[in-house]
Image (cartoon, rainbow, N blue to C red; front, side, top):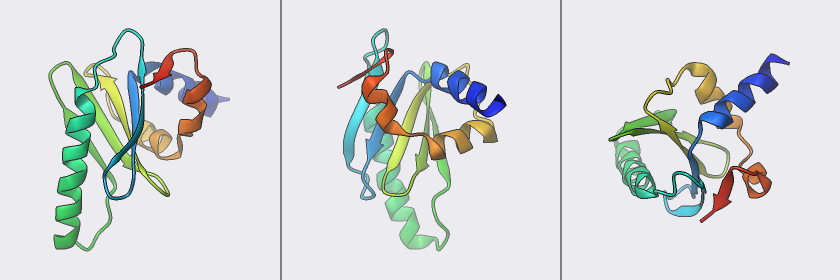
Amino acid sequence: MQSLDLSISHLESVCGVATFDLNGLPKEYFVVEDNPNTNWIQATFQVLGLRSLFSTLLAEGFDHAAIRGQGYSVLIVQQNQFYVSFLLPLTVEMPATLIEWARSFQVDCLRHHDRFQAS
């Protein structure tokens, strides 16, 4: 039951979720009503563009990236067929459990979630 509790607590911390194709182009995003800001999506797009540049220089694959902005942080992970970025308050730490949760997060659940709205 701990993993379910952990999943719920991680999702409660999330203020937005965006998906990007493997080329780094935005596909869809979800925000919470009290934080409709989408500036973090542009920052994610830029990081994924840099990842593409760096991948030509480095043989190793992409694990995750974290962006710290004014008042927020963004966690970016790669899933099977796309990248997912999570908007988080600066107060949320990014332990390994959060990163693992993000890698297996099912974005489809947000289409019917009470807190999130597609934008």
